[in-house]
Length: 443
Image 1 (tube, rainbow, N blue to C red):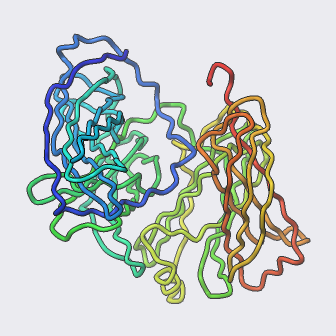
Image 2 (image 1 turned 45 degrees about the horizontal axis):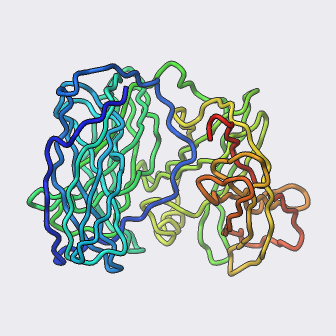
């Protein structure tokens, strides 16, 4: 039950140009949601809903974008979900902009907190802002008591700042990890930055430990970190999927490593799939790679993939580890994101503008058109290139938009690695484009 209510605590901070935090890298959102038991709601007196706004802070980027960071705390006696925050910003020219945003952690137990952030462009500093709570929902869910290690912060050879940690499940239950964020706080407790979703499994089985990686573009050396995670007990519908997974290392002509493999749906029904590949050397984790196709796998479908993105590692660091040997690929499916689905796929029209190679990369650009009569979600292009005898050369996909209306077009660029010695002149191409159909009632 949704209940609207006014702000309980408002904190106003003036903006000063002294602070500067670089924009945090936002990877593509996962197209496969974590599935958890339905959250039930119940009515409660409006006076029982108490949410405070803390640590409201403004940071300006070099391009003039102003980020507002804050923390919301559930001070009521009820678990809450779907909390909405309204942020009002006024710049030096008295221009006012209002944004309504959700919390980054959707579900909060009493005394739990969540960060939130909003970006404002086209404003003039200095500026001021205030935030208020405009809505929330009484929720009923089972919190999972996840344990965390101390985070390790480091820079790789590409100059990227990463934070790695482990999450452990000490119980006999299976945990579903809905979302996880890491906030960077100044010595006086102000939230200075918050990263996007981390990399790692959304499923934490009984008495297991998993590795997670979070990227920050840059942080000051005197900040402290705080972990925010929405983990719940998985429901009985979360089962181990019957999906095959194969993966191995390959190298391009410059000696750069990449992963290539395939997912195989052994089920008799359409299913979402998500795979987690943990790279380990001498029992020490190096990186966690997520393989999440944008569309469901049909019964019996084999979907190949490649990736040269390794969270926490530069390609040069991975190459050095591979040269030393003993690098192991630990593969597993992610049950929380690998579930049966009744989603229907719509064929979309794809037009190629150019197909060329640059070094050891294949670059395909073109346009996708929704020529269906209904809106589609996650319109995507999928390309597979094989030798004439069927051996995989390269494969991958690109999500061109969150959604497309009937008749709408969207451009795409797909960049894939090419293994050393591959001859694309003697190859076969399979280019497809799909979107997930939205029913009339879903529009």
